[in-house]
Amino acid sequence: MDTTETANQKRSPRKISWDVIRVLAVYSVVIQHITHQSPINHAELGPYPFVLPLQFGASTLLVISAYFVCVTVRRGNTGTWLWNRLARLLPAYLVAVVLTYAVSRAVAPLFGWYLPTPTDLLANLFLVQAWSPRFHWVDASYWTLPVQVMAFFVAALLWPRGWGRGAKLPVLLWTLVVAPLVIRFLWRGDGAQQWVISAFDGLALHRVALFGVGTAIWLWTRGRFSGTHLALYLLAALVAQDAHAYFADTPSTIAFGVILLGIVAAAGGPDWDLPVLRSLAGPIRWLGGISFGVYLVHQELGFVLARFLLDAGVGAWGRLVLCTAMAVVAGWAMTRLVEAPAHRWLTTVWPRRWAAAKATALAAAEALRELPQVPQPQAAGSGGSPLMPDASPLVSQASTAVPEPRSSSDPGAAAMASSQRR
Image 1: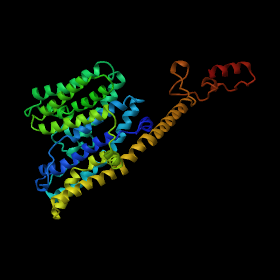
Image 2: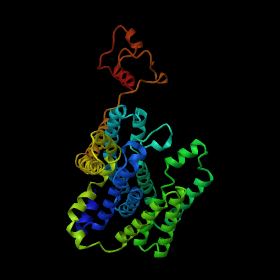
Image 3: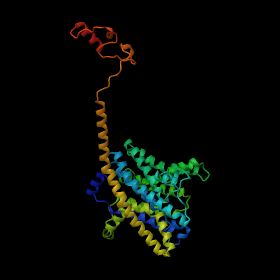
Image 4: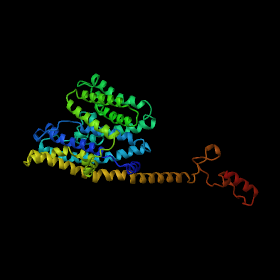
């Protein structure tokens, strides 16, 4: 967190409403992946006592991310802002990728699951998993990370160029909804050429409207979107998201729409200062603070734990509770041991060391420029030979044939020596 954000939070404490939504989104993802997704990926891991099939948590997190991009990108230097965002996101992600890859490699032969390859590892580390069918996700829940990083770069590129003002931004937001739909149904079918599929999936065009939603809510809080305009935009984005899934998961779209109402209320209204939330403020803020770490470790590592528990004879409720607890504990460890210290080092220590290194390099370059210049050899036309230098800087080769050199007190000799120096 940069100093501007810290100062702002000291003046205006963070709303608990945002933590409530973040906790609801992340832990709905955890439960959905344990109870619904794990039997799809590995049939032997089900069933569970209940199933949460609604998929809305990850989309909610992207909307929240987009909203706070708009809130924070206006503060200070855009390059510093981008570095701050990447320093928060990437170190923990890279560690999670390596950890998940190592665990998956170790257990895949035991369980008969897919064995990730070094190519998969590199593709995930460089965030290009979706660009080729030859790459496999180390953890499928990581699909949000390339999308977020891309959004950060786009925001850093567009904001200093005035895209946050005037009519350009609303036009861009509607383009994010309409253009991907056109591409989806005109060119991106199951029989499309691979480069079309790779570009569409790699750029996550079926998800970019989520960033439009977060931006539209921010515009509404700034009085630049009317309530009617915002409602129309949210409805269009919901229909578009359902259309990208070929209207096969409408209940999830409806659930997502309900969560969007909560985000609008959190962004534009007062904090949810309710007695029950006040009493739970500490745990809610703690769970919200480790939410990114939980997101990174809950799915594939949770599947591995569920399989070990199943083989050990643990029942459905036990697997559900223990896998959820593992996600919380491992997410806390990821936050405490990787995310927070890496972000702190990259945003405090590294800038100072980088500035010191640049100052040292500039000083060294300046010192090199001030060194005495090495005399250049005389050209052939200046009276000397570049290949056969004079035997003496004061006496020419012709003068060496004179048997009795003139005394230095001889005015003629002095004139000759002076001409030879030139």
